[in-house]
Amino acid sequence: MRMEWVRGEFRLTTDPARVDLDAVHGYLSRSYWAKGIPREVVRRSIEHSLNFSLWHEPAAAAPRQVGFSRVITDYATFLYLGDVYVLEEFRGRGLSSWMMEAITDHPELQGFRRWALLTRDAHGLYERFGWKPLASPDRWMERHFPDVYAPKK
Image (tube, rainbow, N blue to C red; front, side, top):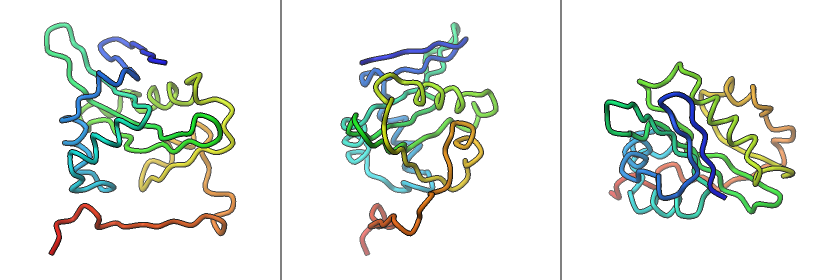
């Protein structure tokens, strides 16, 4: 189900054809959570996710992707939210909140038992949408390879 929302000069869309792979890769490859990620890995991650692409579409200029997030899910019980960003020059306009509203309210993402995400610095944003620290962190386990995208020595 492709969905779109428009607010002024901004469009948020789940249309996979609207993802600007170069823009998303450019941001993620510099981010703290995916620094150095190969373009092909980003392409595969997008291909297997429900993507939310945020576009700035001013009347006098070419459209430009300025934000992104993706949902990894089985569409039944579990959702992982990742790769959420809005370009620095577009922050402070409520665009992250708008994106979170769209994700939270998306009809295909309702009735799940668990939603999960990782963040270093956006706790306040997510708390406004019902996210909380892990209730039982002692039950969670992970395999984490923080240097997986680093050049091999």
